[in-house]
Amino acid sequence: MDAMRLREVQAPLKARYRTEASSARTALTARADFRDPGVSCTVDTWAAPIRAGLHPATGGDGADACSGDMLLQALLGCVGVTLRSVATAMQLNPRSASLRAEAMFDARGTLGIERDVPVGVQDILVTVELDCDADETQLARLATATERYCVVGQSLRVPPTIVITRVTR
Image (cartoon, rainbow, N blue to C red; front, top):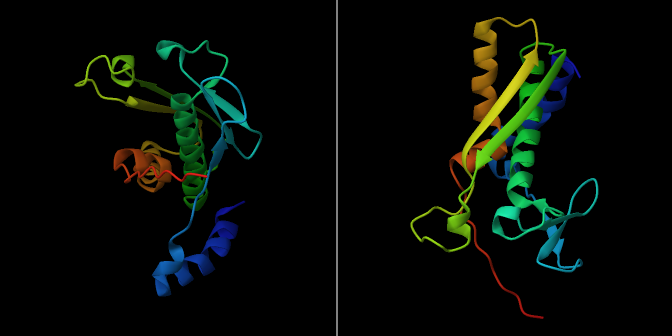
């Protein structure tokens, strides 16, 4: 998709969202269940179900996906798509890209060992290696716009309210 086609596809959406702001609120959903045994939760994804389980640092054996890793994978998916969209709009044509996300979590927090230790992923670093003819000014603009418009990145930066409800069958 080139810049002209991207603008063509997005123009009617932008026009509608400008005149009907409420139509821009878009639902996202995910589903999971306990279909697999053990301390796990199987998450339905676009490609296939993924069994998430305990990280080895919290008692897992490493056979299941770690939800923290899955969070970083979602972040990379969003960063990559956002970067390509912005690059397309800027008429930059990256020949290739390699993205990597790294982070830490302190198992003492999630295991309840020390209450003052945060529970959650911390210190996220995303590295993008881009093969592109853009100059430093264009690359800086590309990075700034990618950070600004990445839905997952912004959700981590300004966390949403999360409410867990219980429904009894």
